[in-house]
Image (cartoon, rainbow, N blue to C red; front, side, top):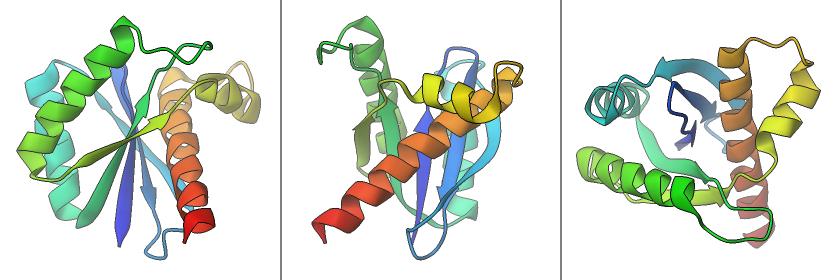
Length: 134
């Protein structure tokens, strides 16, 4: 089964895909965010083409652990995506993933690479936590 990881952004949506064994997350080319309808359509096509069984969306939680405006916007996006692909969307705390991606890639990293590297970290976090609970 493959899992798709998503790092939602207002300009680009970073994507990552797991291997069949759900062990390793690999960054994919991000999707331009030209509005919810267009980006959800593009992601739905990926879900269908890659036979994705689960979608994981990074949830921007504040450092104090609370959900603020951006977290609510991501949940609204997740609900729309869930309805389109007819699958439940899981959420993963994405605190500090951009910082981790920047550390991995270096400060001169292209923003598109940064978005998908963040999605890769989100998905890898999800995969690792699921392995521990099995």
